[in-house]
Image 1 (cartoon, rainbow, N blue to C red):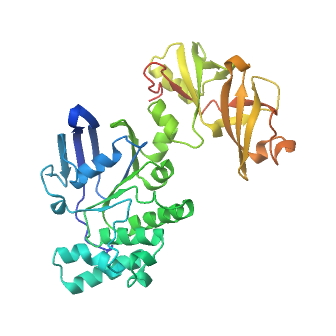
Image 2: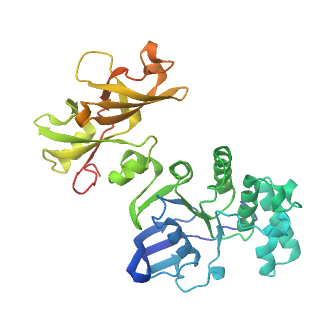
Image 3: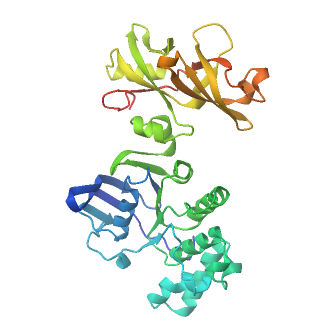
Length: 385
């Protein structure tokens, strides 16, 4: 781990038309394409069963590739043994040897490779310092907390000085506080070691905070690849829009109307003019009037206190979060009610509601017309991408 903690070999990874098909023709991963740059941090994210861990295991060599080609640094590695791929992997379960000390656990992969004892000691010490676990080197895993064990597992992976570091939901066994702490530690680790990261998680917060780019998967198929801001601001389809963001985006049946002066959306009895930039995008695509699915994030809804083009709602649940409040409201009559979730800064509420909004309260709201999303109801694709 010399210089920036270890030498800096190229570490690109290229997945070309990768497929994993199990018995009975059951596809787990279908036509996965992704080019990962040297030193890039890529996150594979999606719900359970979407194929993200299977993809990671194919990169690691723990799963055979049914179709397609996998390259590491331009070298085809489909049939290369895991030990010869110059990768390390951190598992969800830590997988530490209980009878070994932390020092022995971390040095074990190097011992198997018959690395010189002095070199093993140097690498273990340096990795322990990076991860702030030097004081635990002579302890057994049972004497450590979950967060400390995960640091040891990461340390065991990085002492090998791999070209590519694979992490399979490494924080899922930790409580919320420890997950936050370990996310910060992984960001620091990334800044201190020269390697390429491929990280798997079902947690969108981890994906958004850790990744240079995110690959969002569903049913074995990549739905969108982009930076955290790209997938948040311009989701490619309804699935991505609903998966990224907390609380989840609201969706409404609506009508997009094209007029001489631009576009407007008719929804919930109100008319929402489409923002200038968005209208330009629609016009450049030749978009005509059509039924659409309107998506609006809870934080892009504003409480309306004046007269005008607002939507009336009734509060059913309010969750006060300190500086903001989540409001679960309904719009319309009981037979055709539409739920609307809002995320409002408490200072934007009427004064009488800043300590809480009671059940049954009546509120009027508007959508931020620069931040709406429009989807084709049939294909579920965005009209703006």
